[in-house]
Length: 169
Image (tube, rainbow, N blue to C red):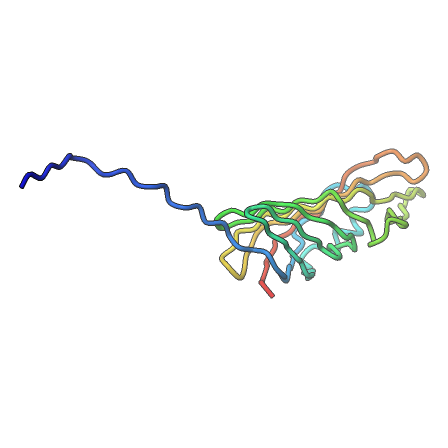
């Protein structure tokens, strides 16, 4: 009997990549940590720092691709979301938002002490979350364009940042 062997290791197949399964209903809680920019709107929104806002997030998943809808973000803005899932994280983004839940009311008017009025338009949402099956934690930001209702010109941007916790429902 003749037996032959070669040194070294035998080739192995690459380990399969596991993608977190995050499709379904989630409870999404955001603790506001800061508000930056926004001209005279800043004090109005800065009063929300340290508050926690909870909402429901519905995610659909196709492989690593995610789509979903948040029926009302922190400031009453409905947003369609897209994103990706990886092994232990998900990233969600949106620029498809309807302020105040209605295209008919596309801005939030706020009177400024200078006698002018500014409006918030064009909200965008971003969330990056590390997940471990039925829960997750991460960061959140919601950015708005602040415009003059008389000229329509952009005055500034305002960004609301926070921390996120998610729990599968």
